Image 1 (cartoon, rainbow, N blue to C red):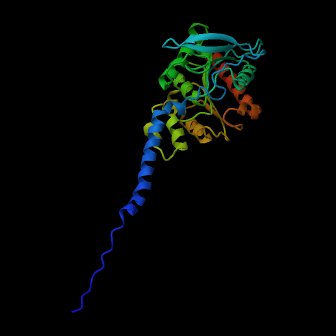
Image 2 (cartoon, one colour):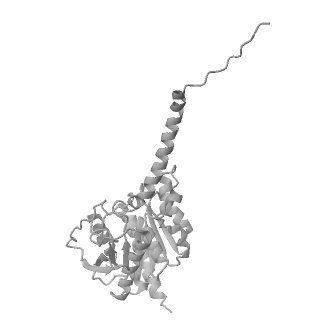
Image 3 (cartoon, helix red, strand yellow):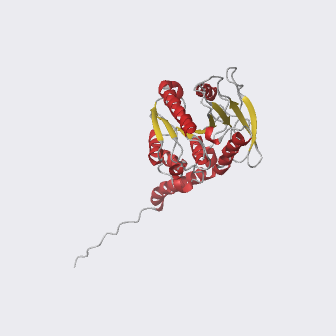
Length: 304
């Protein structure tokens, strides 16, 4: 009887198994490390006070009638504030824009001075402030709720110290400031809300940039305008550039869709922060028309 010997495959050498395990282990550890890094450094992803002009203050231009002021935050931090009165003309609207800027730079950088000058020329006043830890404002912890408190403190100062009726205040927010402005508009009386380069929420933006990361689970800073926009009854104007590479145009569209009437949406070009220059005719035609309507609406509808 001839024997048939079954051939048993030899086990792969131990070092060959490690060739398969090591890359997987490295990938897993790298992914977990990336998650940990993003969680620990969340503030660094959301807030950039040292970028985009940084914290160094630039002197106000001679043709910008800045009245410097200091407003105390709820936790007694000094917030640097610039008041730019409306022009001395007969056609001024009697409205004031409370400006909540984006996540970088400060109120004095030349680009923001240019914006303020152009906006004031439409016949309104501007009150712009730096959040805690931005510009020359005092240092303090950067946190979503604390930024909301900073904006509310400036609003209260406008009403109580400057004597500006709430019905003559228009809340304006750009980029991250759109989240601050939307929260404030949901809490107080105002003539209207203007949002430029706005998003639905910080986690939504983060998830669009890092789709492979669990951003919505990690994020504690949310600025979730999409969750409160439907409660804001005042007139709303949303401005967004179709070529915005920082906050994609689709986010502005989604926020607008969730907002109740009265509302208006204006498509621009010029990127995230220069549409008022690149597309100035569309920008200021829409803003001026909307502001005039808001001013007239308030005059025709006195407070009960």
